[in-house]
Amino acid sequence: MNHTQSKALFSRAQERIPGGVNSPVRAFRGVGGEPVFFKEGAGAWLTDVDGNQYVDLVGSWGPLILGHAYPPVIAAITEVARRGTTFGAPTDLEVQFAELICATVAGVEKVRLVSSGTEATVSAIRLARGYTGKDYILKFEGCFHGAGDPFLVKAGSGVETLGLPDSPGVPKEVAGLTLTAPYNDLAAVEKLFSERKDIACAIIEPVVGNMGVLIPEEGYLQNLQALCRAHGVLFILDEVMTGFRLARGGAAEVYGLRPDLTTFGKVLGGGMPLAAYGGRRDIMSKVAPEGPVYQSGTLSGNPVAVAAGIATLHALRAPGIYERLDFIGRELEAGLRSEAKEANVPVTINRVGSMITVFFTEGPVFDYASAKKADTARYGRFFHQMLEEGVYLPPSQFEAAFLSLSINEPEVAHILRAARKAFRAVGQGA
Image (cartoon, rainbow, N blue to C red; front, side, top):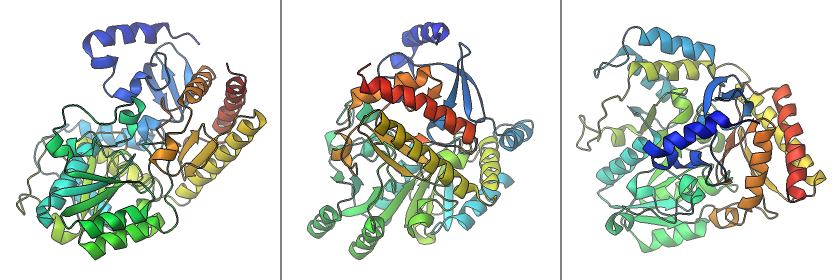
């Protein structure tokens, strides 16, 4: 493939944008080479600035569950934008949207709209601290909850891709208020809770997507929720990635959970910058102006983003949506396993619904330590072979791939043809 225009744009970008990108994982540091610059998306396909086309398995890192430029979402955005993009004042749409979220997700009795997943998670832990009067938070190794200071401790996503154990610029006093435990290790949490009574909340990705896909062991999330309740620790489910993706009611529906607080983003905004946090009425009533825990945002609940969110959630009401996503996921998973085996390339494939990761390692991958055993050099070679064959994967071993409803049997066949060549090239050391 010719990437002349992408190379020229990346050269220009590096002069004015740190690293040439506006989010680190986009820079291809995890796979080598230079990033592709895109100009258009339609359905399951992306077109780059050089005219090359790719089946998209990134989906803007999760939001585009319906595919690119889904007509009802574009129509909703266009109609509302004609009347004004933002007012900095209440609108009827945000009331409709809040009612829709609360009617859909277990345990969400009140909700506050914000503009990013990071804003949602940072606001949620501030609220948990304000509600409980405790300062410490518990997160889980490899879980990524955005780029807020409290979360850049043993984080996943771009932090892991770039090999940064923690981030400079986060004062040790702030980092010291974040406790960590291994994912899928309930005993570690029990020990921590028995030793400390100053923990405000535990926040977790129910299905981890930011170390690649890590799947909760049976009973883990339910027992973690029960432990939190028993010890007076608020249980925060970070559904920025899984919300409205694994099921209409998110991971809470799939695993039978009722968290104290939940954070949302990605699918919620239908491709627009929109996120939210919500939960129990007594906790959310502490948020200003109803309560003393302050949070605000200039563009929070802006009508264009909210219109996209409403259109997306309405589209996801259609019967069979999530069954279809799971079916395509199963077909892709089975095909990838078969092609890897045929090429004699050892891999572990983790999938939940429409989230999937091919780990280049033989053993099971279930936590931060086991994910770190993956062969990132092999993944990099696989990534570039797939790119040349017209498949856009996450440019990092430690990021989930996302399927959309626009991916059908022809796209799966295209992906698997590309994978056959890519696995063989990896197996031969290309």
